[in-house]
Image (cartoon, rainbow, N blue to C red; front, side):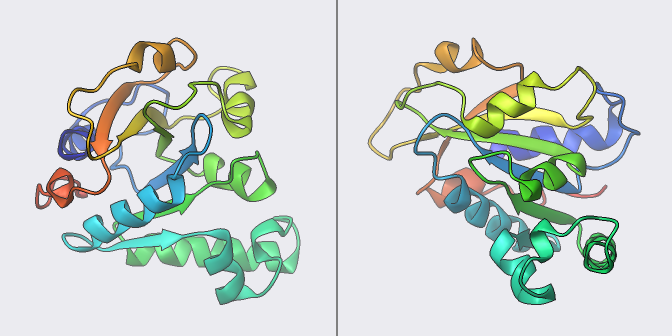
Length: 200
């Protein structure tokens, strides 16, 4: 994770590879990869780590609906509620350095909205599980080139008793990503580089 955060921070001074204007990775969208992926747990840990060093906020379907009312996460953008959601998103981006969104296992309206505003897409899977594409991943990779201007990274979560990461090639064979990372979710040391991810 330390290496991933350093890599993310370097994007501040690098030209984009997918056509997005040169900018820090503000909106980070976590998508379940493979099967039985603890993507939500990873997103919570990532947001918690970031909040120790910069202004960061976790955003899920439940949190959005709780703050704006039931159905906010699925509201059409042309409706009054949809406009409220957009205004809320703009305010969150103004107040925080980073927002960590949690997408669904299926390509729901919420997940598609998150992906449209993503600066970074983290495909989070469990190392050792089947590397097959999740439903959301299938939808992502079916879209025309350039649909998403965000960087895509594969994050494989290792069990704490694993010592040597393996099996990455099988995951990468099914996914087009800009980088891959192995993370021990239960080890705080993997989130231990202060200010590794920042707005510059």
